[in-house]
Image (cartoon, helix red, strand yellow):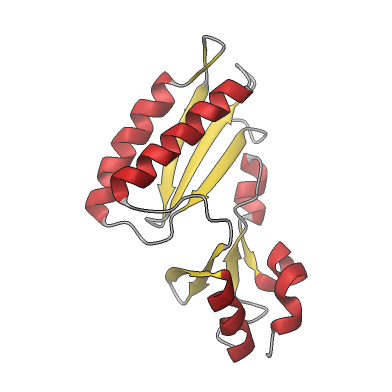
Length: 161
């Protein structure tokens, strides 16, 4: 299914890496949810993905039907169900994800700040901007070096290297 570059996206980051078995289960649940996702009785052109066994991403191509407040509420409710099923937290916006070599890790804000002070996270460390709003931004601004991210504005004074 082809999606417009302007398709809306919502990125939810788990506070831990899911196992491969959990990802398989979650993909089925995501497919079932997005297949039946509606806004004011109109079927949404939607899909869900899981990336790096950690990020749940919902897509809605609004060229067919736009996501409404009620449909967004349905997706939030669904995400809360996933949290309960897999014992994860998807709504902690200060659980910050970054790359270390080929691994995607996350840390709570205070630990992230310590890693910056220690030099374990630097200006070229890839961080994840889960605030992206559309497919274009997901493809170009989701995985970025720390120095080019919103993280730099908030934590840049803590970088030692």
